[in-house]
Image (tube, rainbow over all chains, first blue to last red; front, side):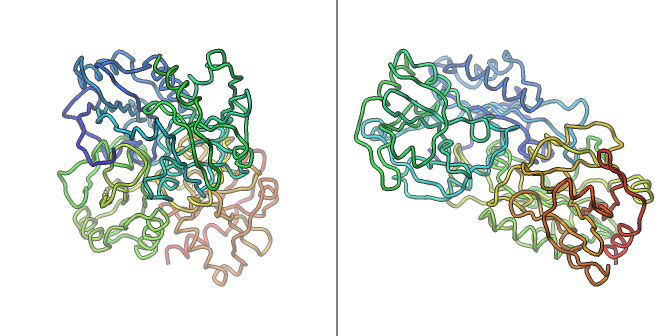
Length: 274
Length: 274
């Protein structure tokens, strides 16, 4: 999954054009991105991903590229039978030196085709083990929730462990509240309540999290956003991590706490696939 | 100063190579940078800038490129009479998808020649006016002080004003402590004390700030790091902003507070040039 690849990509629709060293995504992380699955040439849950891309662009006062142009890029990169991962990056565009956004700057869109990730069946069958990261996520309400390109906290967190037994790392804020995994969102079941952290100050509010938040009826659980601390998480009946690429996995171990295998992750996966 | 330019640059010493869309600086802002002046082909205060680049790389667990290679790049971009701005970007290198740093990844260095900025003489003669930004800087001790490529807070702050009368914007943290300008560090004189904010939680600790912190004897002031709030700043006798490109300017106005023209900024500029 982490092998070095030279991917197929389109830069503003072109195979030939390339990134400038003055691109503001390179200079400042000034942009947003999306990662999603493509099956049979079709971007999965496209409406949700496109809506999130548009919302994230709006938060950064970026002009979101036309949906039609992105869909054309996808068609170009994936044939009608294509399977893989699609990454979309929208950068503020090419600037000069300095933080001020030049007048008439044009956003750049980069659409990248990457190989389908292969996850161990063990993650699905047995659940996963999380590493407890020591870095605490900062609070920034202006940027929280957005999948922007300022991801050094995730990078620093991911450097904390190398043991492949840990599938992801859990991130807390400075007050000990659970926020997310480095590459996933988190849900914790307490009796008939399924809670996911409040991401108004930190974290990325993913599309899969949003989908699970609408599953109250199907799961017969009260699924909602509600803050909880690490200590409270240890008291949860079940813990789930989710993202667009793998769906949902049960967390079986975190620090000294372990959980028995249960059925919620499997139910959620089925609903996500439905 | 903000005109669109297609600069001369070297990518790992080459004129021809270009950025990959999988470069982690583009994907995650995973890297650090420096901006400095070049005069007569010589990078000004090189030892300090190189030391800061090396320290910042170390904080992110990045291998800093060899000093000799960077100096060769500079020689290549600037002839012995060259004047201008030099920007050095060190990126983690080309990755795959995902935050984990691939084994044997090689950092990329990009060295860019940009035009000499032209600042109005009014800034020197009369001082400058600061905008008070509403975005509050987040606290992240793991990244504070480092001139890394995650600069969306500065970008969002810089978007808050367009009136060119404001030379920079002042940034506070969530508790109302003064941290820095979007492109400068701040000093405030209270009697015979010249204070600059503590940057252990937020902000970029610039080279010029470090140089001014060593000027106690020359200025006959007790120059030191000590936190102060916005309310305390309004009580200051003099306020100065500084960076590598312009040196030091007196702040004459911020919100409803104005300050008379005084001599400290001019003294500091002279010492910085010395």
